[in-house]
Amino acid sequence: MDKTLARINELARKAKTAEGLTTEEKTEQKELREKYIKNFRSSLNEVLLNSTVYDPEGTDVTPEKLKQAQRDMHLKNAQELLKEKNIVFLDADDKKM
Image (cartoon, rainbow, N blue to C red; front, side, top):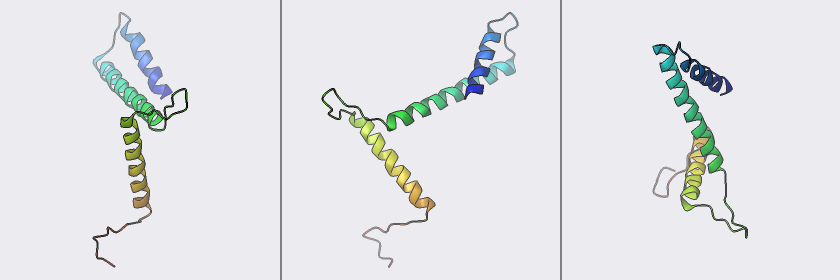
């Protein structure tokens, strides 16, 4: 991430000079910026999905939308873990026994 940001800044400084950027450098700059923003958003989402909001009285006031996203994330992680371990749960309607 640090190398990506350093290269973005290097290209930004070069863009401000009389020389400017070549077409290849402009393309690289665009791709690096998109990569950086994607990583930043991913990190922010990870922080938010692991956060709980409390008011001064200590009451959980986490927005319902965030709580639902957290539940969805935990369910997805549990399903992936079970799949990795080849664990299958049968439905009540499933007659295979």
